[in-house]
Image (cartoon, rainbow, N blue to C red; front, side, top):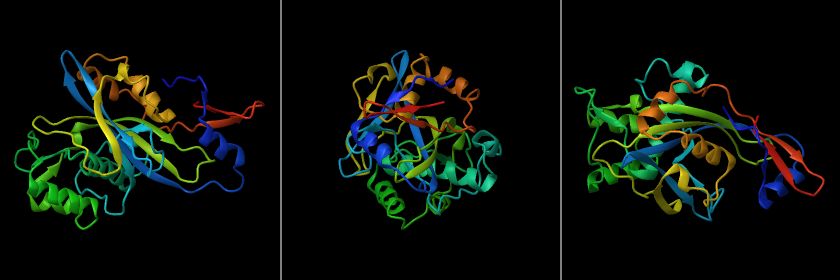
Length: 263
């Protein structure tokens, strides 16, 4: 359940909220992935600090981004439309974007051999793989074509829907974003390869209190602190409502600030 305590917005967002008028921007579908790995008896998650030149520069976030027209994996689980609360074509695109963005920003690829459905790729950090990753990021190669060429299938069974958030109306860029959790495939290494971050680190969910994050990111991290093991997170994901979006509401306060209500 989402914490209903309102969030006080930082100065830049307060300014946009108080100056907003007119028609809200069109909402674009997006996906972001909370990558998990074991750490002793518990787990860590992977966060990036966005470069100052990027939207929300200086804030910590998870790998992710907007859905691209090429995000159309041919074969995914049949339960995704119900889990995400959207028609099949849209669900395919969101899942495809989640896997592609994770690959583009971290070099981690959720895929395995077609003839061995239970296997995942190990090392995808070679020069050949890096050339393919760069081609996907540059839109010179689609992820679907890359997988087909290498005889691979998308391992969307390693992806678990966690939450859904819609950007407030005052923001100039708005997204309908699905948050997923995923396990780091054995043998793969998450790397800062996107050029969009100034820092990338693994951290325990409970050790992030000093990291600046947007409300959806912070609430996602906070929701993971209740679990000690990755298996508990995956089990909880099946009970999470990732179809109903959280639609934050802004309250302008008499002191010149603004509060964001998350329910």
